[in-house]
Length: 104
Length: 101
Image (tube, rainbow over all chains, first blue to last red; front, side):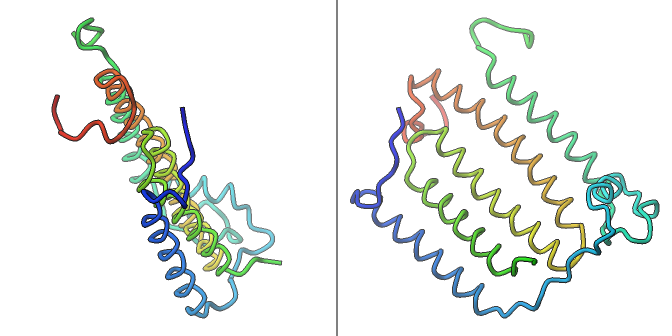
């Protein structure tokens, strides 16, 4: 059963004030930073294809009109290993100890 | 046509503060996980907004990696919620006050 946390509840009032105060501080900083206009992408750039080239570190094949990006081949492989580790960890946590399972 | 980068930052700050409030007040472990996801997604909004701001695709590619990490975190988190329910009969995060049982 889920209930939503209420700001008027005395138990959550202080944390609510903290969250709203954090938001006010962030808004003050952001609005006072004075950003210039966005550079944006050129209209003939293929964003999705360029993301694919960047994932495999093939930015030299992306063409002249593609936006600049770094290559991410090493990070791509590392995230692969992390996802497999998380999957194995979830299966290990979910396996019941008393029944054994395939880990036994 | 393009939205100014300040508004992306305001949206991101609102989502992040919602996540912080949820993490500090929620007792249900699943709602706790969803609040953590909110904070991760506010970081994603910032990455994509500044990717457009600088005309550089690095931020968008990095947002994909943050999503993959969020998926890994949810996989492990749901496993922990399962163990929590099995040991305490409830998924109240305040039940697990020690690191062993």
